[in-house]
Image 1: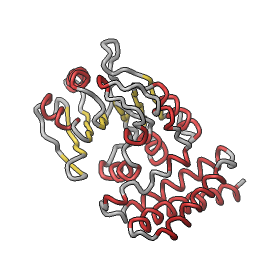
Image 2: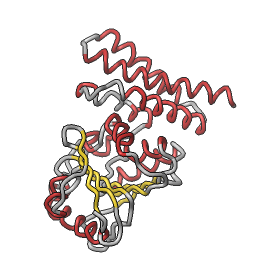
Image 3: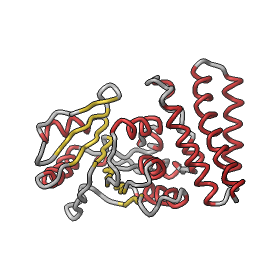
Length: 273
C-alpha cells in the first residue's frame, strides 16, 4: 500500500510539471515538445482512473502542492495563466451540461459557459498564498460555478470550511461528486441556490468570494444581506471583475488590497472597519 501511495505521489508531481512545461513550450511555438507533454498528461490521467480512492487523492494532493511551487515561476505571464486548467481533465469535470444551458440574462447564464465561469487554477493558488487565510476559517463562494475554488482549498487547506452556492443545479451536482472523490466532502460542500431568493439567508462567514456572478438586482439583494451581517461581524469580501465596483458603491468603501492589475480586490468589512 505504501509503495502504491508513493508512486501516486510521484505521478502527481509529474502531472503538475508536465502541465506547466506544456503550456510554457506552447507559448514559444514548440509544437513537437508541447504535443509530447500533452500525450504524457493524457497517459497520467488514464493511469489515475485505475487508482484506488486513497491513491487518487494522494495523486491529486501531490499534483496541487507541486503546482504551488510551479505557479511562482509564472511571474504573472498572461499566456501561462491557464497552464493548469488540465486539472479539469484529471478531476473529470463535465462541462457538457452547459452546452444546452438556456440563456438567462437575468442571472448571466449562457450556452457553453463552461470553464469561462471559473477562476484559473493558477489564480486560485496564487491568491490563497497572498491572502494569508486564518486557520479554520469559513469561506463562502457566492456563485461557485463548477467548484474549482472549493476543491483547491479543500486539498491545500484541509482546516478550512467551505460552502459554495450556485444557481445551476448540474454544476452543483458535479462539484459535490468531485469533492467526494477527492476526499474533502466533510468540509467542502456545494449548494443549489438562487441567491436572489428572499427566502435564503447568506450564512455568517470569515471570507466571501464573488467572481462577478450577478446582475444588478441580485447584487443589491446579496449586498443588503452582507451589510446586515457586517453590523455584528468582521469579514473579508474578495471580488473579481465588476463585483468590486458594487462593493465600492454599496458599501462606500475602497479595497484594502488589490492584485492581478486590480481585478482581484480585498475589502475589510465589519464594525471595526
